[in-house]
Image (cartoon, rainbow, N blue to C red; front, side, top):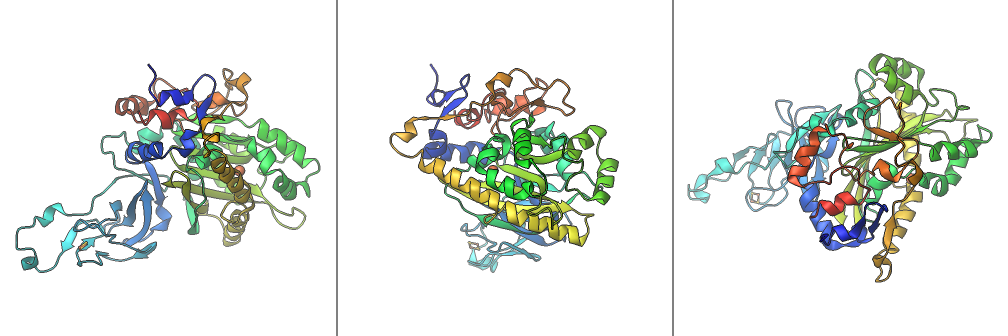
Length: 460
Ligand code: FES
Ligand code: FE
């Protein structure tokens, strides 16, 4: 007999109950069984360059501190005093030698150790202070990206990322010094389920043609005759890739578009030195790259210029975390990145291009936010919640992956239902190192499942 969870999903038909976006119990299970068990993106190393630097973040609904301790080691500490539990750090970011709890004054070092309390006779000499250090998450770092997990039995971060690293390298590891964060993160809190963002960034190319159509016109048509038709075709024909915990879309520019469109020539020389030729081949014609690393880390990247007659076309690069707040509320964290080697002028242009497009007031995000808010409102009613979410797209390509795709994992010539959304765990390769562990822990589904499967199976 299929479980109640399984009855919510039709795998072959690529549909799922709308309860995946509206059910309170399912949301709670996601927090318990996904966000406490798998690797989560916390922040970028360039946000805490010096010993003693820290920022505050969240892992699921747990507050944490990302800190570089006084030996230079990056740690993720639970932001909850081991005495009565209040937040020991209340600022978004800062620098210091430790954290003093505001309630009774216990002091914790940057490595999380409890180093001072009130006079011992306050506690009668009976308390074992050695067991009262701040709780620490397991930390892993890849190309400056800091991830953490509460699961000390999980595969290493390298194993977890697996084949995804090939694609992450194109984005984050393509120059000798790598990426740096521009400014502070932007945050906003839309009224929709947290999964709508990862799904959109991981596997929804076609929405760009409709909801972003006018801005594509505005951005490109001025300087490129026939741009709308070309861009539409490029978006529809975008290769979609699934590799390890990553799912994404690599929109290749139309032939009319010059190679290295929007790139700084000095940086292109560094890409060619740093990346493999196959990775360079994907990057040089990349019109846009969006992707999601399970469960809630995404990026969006591409050239933008609002008036190509007057402004240079500059690549923007945004990364983000979709933080679950409630079943119908998400907090989005958004950072802009640029190559460390970029000149100051380029850094400013990249920031401007990003702010105009992908942040709370960005043109693209405003488009998407309206649609996602609409999904939530359109799925919460007594009638509408009984309907399905339809993930069917390009079903005729489901069994026709690109034979000579240069990267690992599996790629399809279009965004297909079989290409597995951001919500699945693994490329499907029998050798996927994380797969056995994932199945053993019943964290995630086995591979070759459409989108909603993950969230449903993870709740079993
Ligand atoms: Fe932190 Fe008491 S709650 S010292
Ligand atoms: Fe969009």
